[in-house]
Image (cartoon, rainbow, N blue to C red):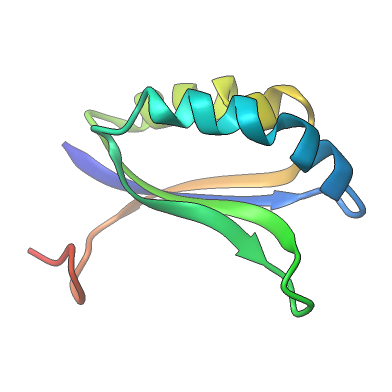
Length: 96
């Protein structure tokens, strides 16, 4: 298993779209509880939600990409950019 950081930035002025799809996103992510190490919204300087960050464990990057592609936020067109990167925790609660 590999840990991946999934970093998603919302399109500008898309808070309404995020809120309209938040319940579906949370339900979808709930089906992957065994894979999620940490997750939540990214916040702008004003404290408003501007994206998502998930630290997840999958067998390979293709599984991480499939999770991301099928996320209701992604399907709704919320994100301007999504980056998925393998991650090796070295400090903190998830460090090996």
